[in-house]
Length: 91
Image 1 (spheres, helix red, strand yellow):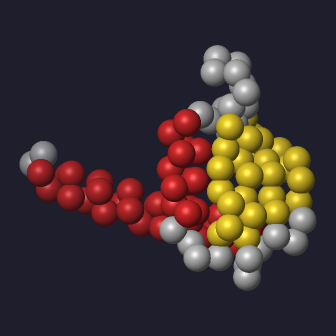
Image 2 (spheres, helix red, strand yellow):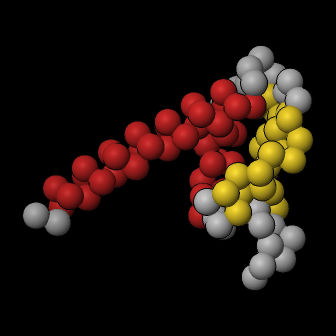
């Protein structure tokens, strides 16, 4: 995964996430929407086969970087919980 910052301002961040696709970007976008300080969260991929996802986030009350860090931590915890429950089921 390679991250390239396209635009960085106080309340806005636009970045390309090379090497990733819909799975990561959709999960992150949905998790960001759960944050009351996130005004805009979305991504697009210009070409379905060779395009690089571009994530855009705008916030109010906290920096976009902080919102992304918090969303990633929530996703990590959710994944750990799923793995724990799944592991119990397959024993």
